[in-house]
Length: 577
Ligand code: HEM
Picture (tube, rainbow, N blue to C red):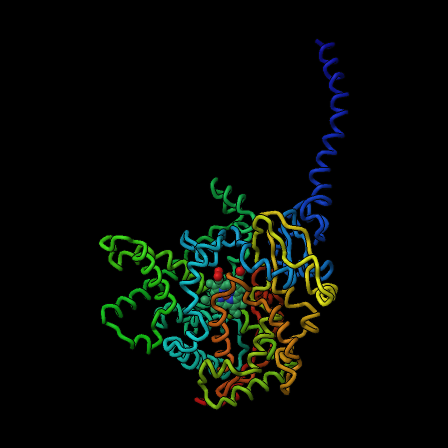
């Protein structure tokens, strides 16, 4: 036996010795040499030395919400197309970049679906594929068109009530006490009430402006949840596995689910209230007076009507038609999921924008812009100008555009997935001016075709900081958005055109923000109130919390007390205009 054992062991040795180097070489070749040198993405510069081998580097940054800055630094070092992981790249150019990736063909994939579904059903923002998405978008686009918004009686009335009767008295009271004002919290209340008034009608929406404690509690729980989206979004498999064995709480605490359920319950109540308003109108108990009072649930009614139309069109036999109430009841959660998304997508992005805009305007070195803005708005000669009149103010527009550029509320990556036979676009034969632009890093180099299912990202943070398009990109300078033919302007028509091509605060293509016109109208109306004829002089008294979050959203990080920017308000305008 001893002999047999000995011979077996000694007989194995040469075999292991000859296989070991081959196995090691095989592994090195497959998992290190190939991804580095021969893989389809191997020509693209690596943002980190480990990028061809593993996603750990980028995942770690995402978990800490510091990705935006690291990716930007890599683009500055390595050019407009970089590799973030074995199967992931980032682009930072218009030609050979966002123009191709976001024009259609590249789908959203599961990244959005994994966290932006509500009540177990997807709103259009989360829909992975073009077909179902474009059908839904067609249903909703018209009510968010600029002309619809400017002419909406319900929105005009709601806007007047919110600004004149709720925001103004609150700001006046705060200015009288002389206490520093937590501005991010105040504007989050305005933007939440505003978007909800358009979706559900004034009386059915939120009333955070008059219920500051409720607003504070909501904001805290809404923000605290945010960091936990990393797990289902980036590591779906692991999160689902832990869910199946009842251990999901290791990654995502139970209170996060409870907070999500609380938001769903709240939005469902607003939907049910909106439904009651519509029923009252349909039954003749309420008439156009509900519109006159700002109570018409415009967005809710649009989706409900579109789904009812779709339902009746889908039936060959009209006798199969269900009563309206029953059809709506069956579609209750589908409508609520879409409304929840618009409410949440609308309030925080606009609130973040107004917060950064106010911060910039209230810093001592930007005082001249605050003065110019006040002069421009008071020139309108009415405390309640129409949205059209407000929209025509060039300095106001320049201040807002510059804020959306430097402090885009969604500056982070917007992932898409390559289809089969994907390319980043561009032509291998480029004329002299394109070659010159290429040298300046404004156009991506041409890389070979990309394989299917590669994650491709772009981020507004980097697109908005291209020094060849935006001179001194880190400086907040509204003058760049004004033509050099105007007294305060700096840019030629050509420069203005080029900056607009690179402006990406609302994304681009078929998945571009549906609420951009609402956001612009609402933000401009708030600015007109704060610095208009009834308005205030604002100064920063504390801004340690104004650092940007480096994740998908860029809300201010907050100081040790969670405060973003503290302002002093001094009433300088006349009461009642
Ligand atoms: C300053 C304010 C806003 C900014 C900066 C902003 C930005 C964006 C961006 C960048 C996207 C594309 C995101 C992606 O593909 O990952 C988007 C989509 C979207 N936004 Fe906004 N947004 C703002 C206000 C609003 C408002 C007020 C609403 C309310 C209706 C809204 C509703 C939506 C919806 C529903 C989508 C998804 C569109 C689709 O899937 O086709 N947003 N937004």
